[in-house]
Length: 420
Image 1 (spheres, rainbow, N blue to C red):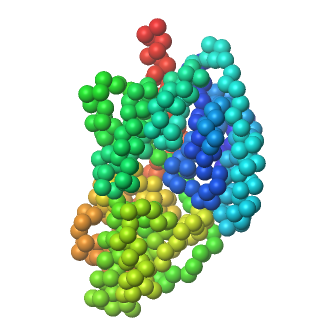
Image 2: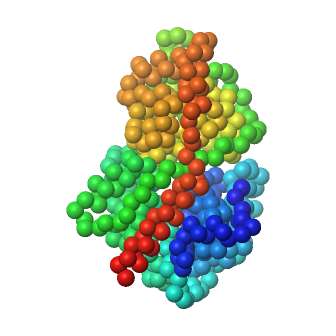
Image 3: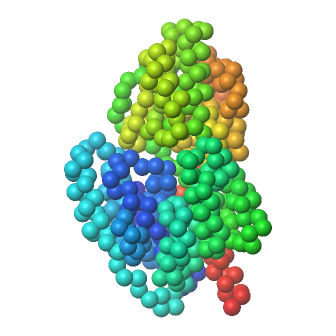
């Protein structure tokens, strides 16, 4: 857990007079959710890491679930972050009524406060989630209230570039988010070079010219914990929400084919970790009605981080056959656990895993079967070769990511002074 340093020497990471207001609206809206999404984790780590690096230049703000905007007291935010992480680690410990009471107390403690006058400070409003970005007027009102410049993290443009994988209104809503960034942001952080290229294509011809920097999402080792349910060895893991672009259907058909061709005794097992999402009727039909794969497919939803870490560490490999990704945090999380990765050959996943994973076209079913059989066989060489490559892999760090954010703010601040 990151805490504030004993001194403020690290504040030299920002120019004199520059302040950061970090938006926590997304986390505040998730007080009734036992388990986090990837975006939830990112917003929390932004808060923790900025508290560590620039504590005396950092303020917190949010639009609460009732639509009111304001500042949040630092001590109360730190307590909220602690409680949120504890909830994620022990989601089974609280009943629904207890969570409702806890959420009410949290929202009362974190009720928005008045925004103080800038008094000459140069404010930068940083938002690490897409929360409310589809409402440009609301974002503009926040920036006007704070008299701040806007810095936003871009996670992906997948609903725009691949609308077939989004909810029915997903593409339209995401266009509004991107337009808000284009109109109001002076700087953008892309979570990968692939995302940066997508954003540049979106901005082309718009006249908007925000500074764009690439900062890979950091990763922390998942803790070891209780085994949620023993799975026969050998087994593989897929870690993601069950939605069309994650390509679970390929894996389920592969498992059916392996059971039919080599028999259930020689077929490995598969752990699907993640909640059921949207537009996934075919996958749900396979999970619930395909008797051939029952007994070999193990579905988990709402697992704590320690439980996920335990399942990952004992797996032969993480499988990630996605059709599209913005970055690929499950890849870095698996590699940090020392677990090999077999994933789609996508630019974003190559950025996440470097040269370590085995990369396969997401449509090449026979090659996926070959790789899975190689990794589940008694011959250890294919798996050991990847583990050997893993020795030279350097994982992206959250401190490095946030330092890129601070460097972007510094560059903007210096350019502002040069134009003054």
